[in-house]
Image (cartoon, rainbow, N blue to C red):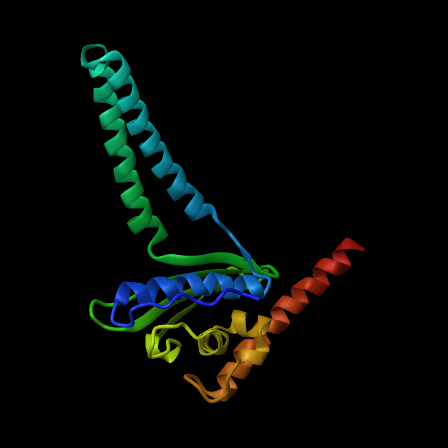
Length: 213
C-alpha cells in the first residue's frame, strides 16, 4: 500500500506541481512501467562532482595554505563554474521539465510537465513511440490541479490516475479500469487510441514470443 501524499498549501503553485510530478512516476511504476533514470543520474553526477571540487579545494586550502594552493584553487574555481554552467544547461536545455522517461512492453514514453505563472493548471507534453514504429505520437494535455487535490491540500490519487489513463492511450492500455468515458476526447477516438496501442503492444509481445521459439 502506497504512503499517503503529504499535505500541501493549495495556494502554492510550486507545491502543487512538485507533488503532482512525484505522484506521476509512482503511479506508472505500479503499472509495471520501467523508468529510465538516465537524466537524473547525469544531473546528480554533475552536481556531486562540483560539490566534490569545492570540498577538496577548501580542504587543501585549509591544510596547506593559500600560497601553496592558489594556482590549483584558480583551476578548481574555473572547473566549478564550468560544471555549474553545464548543470544549468542540462536542466533547462536537455531535461526541459521531464518528469518521466520509461517504457511499457516496448513502448517508449516521455512526459514533460510545466505550469504558467500564477495559473493553477497542470500542463503535460507526452511523447510515445510504439514498438516497431519510427514516428512519435505527441499529446498536449492540461487540467486544473484541483481536479485531484482536496480543498485541505491532499492529492487524491484516483482522479489523477483516471485523468492520465483516459488522456494517454499508453497508460490507458496498462490501466483500462481507470479509463473514464466521455471526458476530454470523444469515446470513439479514445477507444480507437487505447485499443490501437493495446493491439500494437500485444502484437509486439506475440512477435517476440514467436521469435524466441
